[in-house]
Image (cartoon, rainbow, N blue to C red; front, side, top):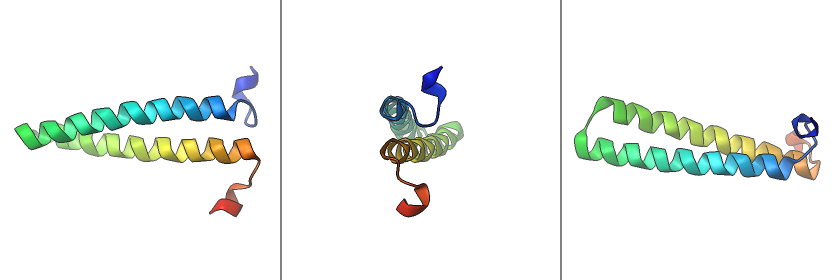
Length: 77
């Protein structure tokens, strides 16, 4: 499958991660609001977990965009 190759379909791959970032953001927001309202420990934990998921998705989006432009990651950092 060509889509699994590192240099193939990076715009599509970035789009999938943008969708995942949106879902993680909504779920994180919901859990943050639930924690503020109910002060349940699992809601606070989930908020942190979704925060990590958002960080991961941002990292993946950046990687696919850099790969798509053919820029070495070391040059960007």
